[in-house]
Length: 367
Image (cartoon, rainbow, N blue to C red; front, top):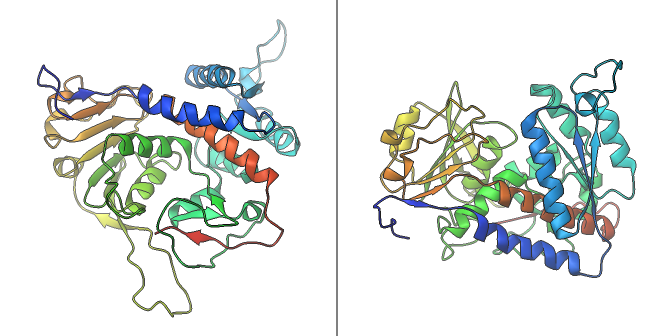
């Protein structure tokens, strides 16, 4: 892609990317299968969460997905004279009820609620069989270990398997396996990068980001760290920058002794890094920022000429002149993220219907 006529980089809205996945979801819904039900749990009255809940409803209604919004805590409208509810009141019970409801195929919870470890605990309450956001530790384990294909029955067990079989060379699940669920925002970003050609399709599947240097700003367990791991698992050199440290992620090579008793898949490993943010940006082909702050801005002067910039945060993390340096600037990925979530919903609904026999725990790594 060339810069536009003004000499600036391209401002790319994600509508064409979202349209392709919207068609995929529509095709999935048109198949002879019951209509899936998604339950959204809103436990605070924060305007971003309320906005996302309304956005989810509109997307579901537009595609024919049944959406039920369960309001608890301070999200519940108070009648005159009633005692005010606190953020998160009843959220755990709402999750458990949705887990136990056979008519519910997927659950999403609008975070943040309590913040920190308490929100992380709630993410583990959601059944992996209904976790459309891919935030359960089972899915993070798979993501961080580069485990791409699983048996449906493995989602019902409590201990991940470490059995390694022959690697594969494409993204088609081997017989008896299905794709693991990936957190929807990181996956949405990867799909955007695939669309604009950051991923090289000539290279082997699983290494198509090889040769790219990427900086991901913010290391949250919801977006930043899983995204950095995804990119490193696909071969990129990734700088994960947080408020107090920088880490470098690279892909672990295959063991030189394949007959060793314990084998690990080639997956990202973390190294301490002494580079500053400015130094990381100067060598990065791609910069992705997900800082939840309206005041935070990535300095345009620090960017590498011709880089790709992706804004994931609700607030714009890049200055208005970002396209003076960036060849492509993607200001928001929300439309793709919601379709990744609905695609996860369809997959989980299908996984529940075609669960493998109990005890089948083989995990198939991806190359």
